[in-house]
Image (cartoon, rainbow, N blue to C red; front, side, top):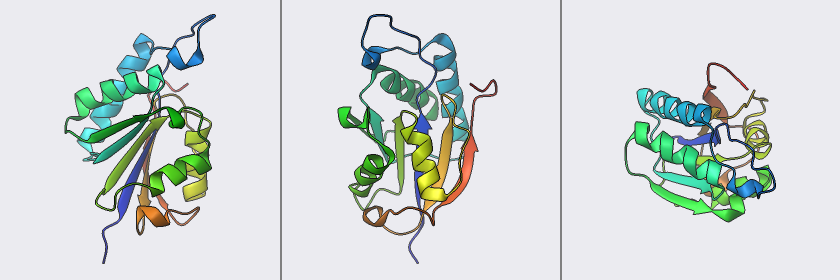
Length: 163
């Protein structure tokens, strides 16, 4: 029997505003940096180590992954992609279907509303998904066959202060 694959969906951590500047360049606030490190600790403590990370190219998503990686450890392959910045849930699912067959644990670091919509689409449960939130989804079968429903929400995490 094939081992279940795991999808880690993470919303970027708390970012500041950039009045007059592009949304794409918004940087993490101190709270966002702390929440990202705490998320990495949570993932590490539970053995949730990705083989492949698909990260939005937006500054706040890249910074979130950087802080998570510092506390999580390991050396997964990381692909930073601009197309993930404004992708919807269906587009994200399609990107995940392209993951190599050998990837057991895939992590996405990106944005709402797509991240929460993706979790709902794959598991049928609507998560509370504040900044830095994480959902761990068990995926039966190959990445290429990833479909709506029928996937298990195995665990979730949100920063203790919410929002």
